Every structure is written in structure tokens, then in C-alpha cells.
Length: 251
Image (cartoon, rainbow, N blue to C red; front, side, top):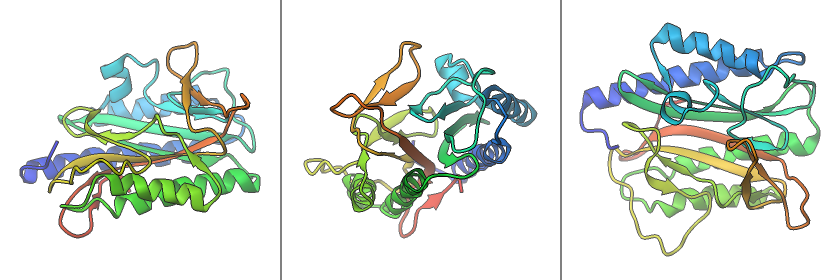
């Protein structure tokens, strides 16, 4: 969607503030010995208290209020009581919600407890890529420049991007046009319109460039050409395109 008036602006900002709050709460609660279902139950309480709807649950019938992925899972991980977090786990928490008719989407990858150097760098690169990309979200800029920054951050740090996963427009629906690639498609001549709402996200990998769906029909994983699983880190923010610096609704 594109922001048309003050009501739209405040609606996106309110939804963005809510999902960011849930994201940070779950990150704080993600300690060794805690199950991913316990984290999701904490999110459920926040949704119910705020009168918000979980976008994956209510729009796509996802079996959870949030997507919580661990280790070699990239995204859409199903919260389960059997998945108990331990020190050194790579965790991704993705929170998307509809609040008062407006959608916002955010996500972050992080390490539970202490991390090895590679995984720490992977998570930092995902954040770097997304933040560099958000700086390209200004009126009149080429859409492809967002993906250029994500890909550049990955390459500069010795990583790859998952090319068949992407960001997207959002606002009145969870997933709207345009698709926001994590690399630069030089043939794409589309420019960003003022007020456009985007979910900009990076998918930074230790080796693979392709995501695959697991047998559960939800969880995504990645492997390289040798069939070895790759770690992937994600960072996602809902952003409003405007003249000059964009508005990041989910900080």
C-alpha cells in the first residue's frame, strides 16, 4: 500500500511498534531451556492483549502466532514444545500482525547465549544488509538498489544471499506488491513511489543461495551444491518510503 493520509501513517506506525515490541520480548525470553512454544505463547498473550491478529495464523493458517526458526531452519519454523533452546543456537523470530486494519512485519536472527565467530558475523551481516537497504527506500530511487545493498553486504563479509526469498510490499495485506529482491536485478526499472510501505528483509547465508521447503509444508531450509545445510540469518523491517530518509516503523 501507499500512505494516503495521516490515518494510514499512524496505522502503520502503531502496527510497527506492536510487532517490534513482541520481537524484542521474545528475543529477551529466548534463553537456554526455554521451548519455542513457550516463546510463541508469550507472543499469543501480547496479541490478545493488544487486540491484534497474527498474520501467519489468521491469513495463512500457520500453526503458531509467530514463526520461530532454529539453527538450519531459515524461516517459517513452527513453534514446538519439543524444541528446547540451548546455548549457541541460531534463532530467527519473525513477527507479523494486523492491528486496526494495518499490517506490519519484522524479524531478527540472533544467537542464544554465546556464539561462534561465524554465526555472530552472520547475524551482524543480516542487520547491516537490511539497514543499508532501508537507506535506499526514498522516493524516486530504483527498487533494485535495495537488493543491491543487501547482496553487497553479504559478499563483503564472505557470505551469500538466498535468492528465492524476498521482501515485499505490505500495509493493507501482509504480502503485497512489489517483491523486494535480496540482490540487484539490473533490468528492473521500477522506481519507488512516495508513501510506499515495504517489508525489507535480508537472508544472508553461509553458503547456499536457494531455500527449500521441508515436508511439514512450512519450514524452509537451505543447502549448498554439495548438499550441505547452510546457516541463514534474517533481519526485517517495515519501512515507509518518503523524500529523504525513510521511516522505519519497526525499530
